[in-house]
Length: 127
Image 1 (cartoon, one colour):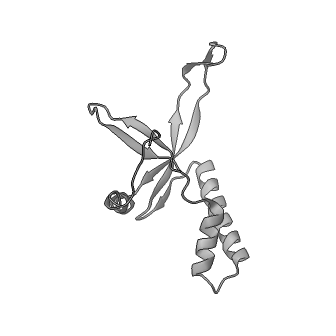
Image 2: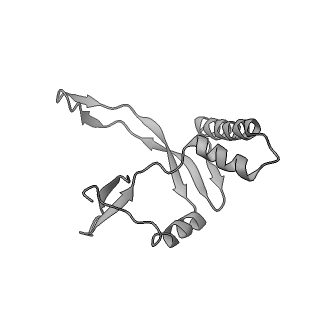
């Protein structure tokens, strides 16, 4: 079953739907890659994926930007402290500043996803 959320765009009364279903997890990525790279043992594929993720994580930790041409870029976005409230108690709290990882899809990825929109049916939760 697909889960979706309604999004409202400023100046546009038409609700947009965002697919929130998990389509691939790390183990599936490894299995798919191992199936295509039959000359490598699955353990080596797993180790390679883990190493890539470690290197990418460390680059972000070090404050560096990651760019994968045709796919997208990863960077950090600064989130300043802000006033918020605890929803359980109603107490006012000030959140701490933080840096959040951010992914910006590249032009080729955006175009491929946009071209596939007719092939993927997004459903409302009510359906």
